[in-house]
Image (cartoon, rainbow, N blue to C red; front, side):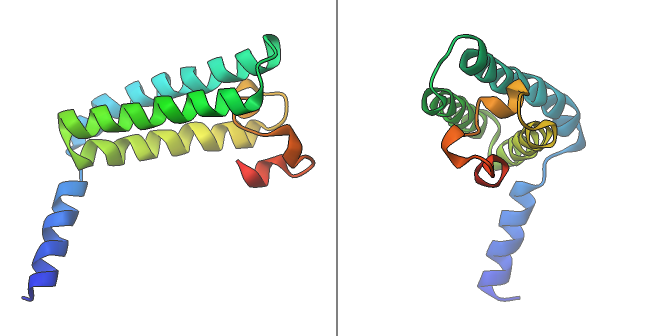
Amino acid sequence: MSRLQQNLGRFLESAVPSPEDVLILLPALILMLGFVFWFCGWLQVRRGWKTGYTRKLIHVAVFLTAALLQWQGGFSWVCIMGVAVSVVLFYGIYRGDGNYFFEGIAREVDAPHRVYYV
């Protein structure tokens, strides 16, 4: 086996989380990130915050959470978070205009194709 294959094998082993980690972290991260997306949408729709600020708030929350997860649990925990972010983001895109999950991240200047630029 070549050195590249060995390194790739080690990388893939580090990326695969245990079933216990998935069962514990995935629902918790979906709830936490769902709240962040919802809250940012609420700030934008109800409080009149600019979308640029709510997008920044979402990005800060996502990247800080990823850094903390990397520090505490390693790359496999960050992979779980990637799934959680995807679930919340796809839910917001599915619900579309007017939904807080979507409004916190979608820019008005991208209308009428806001969904393409999220």
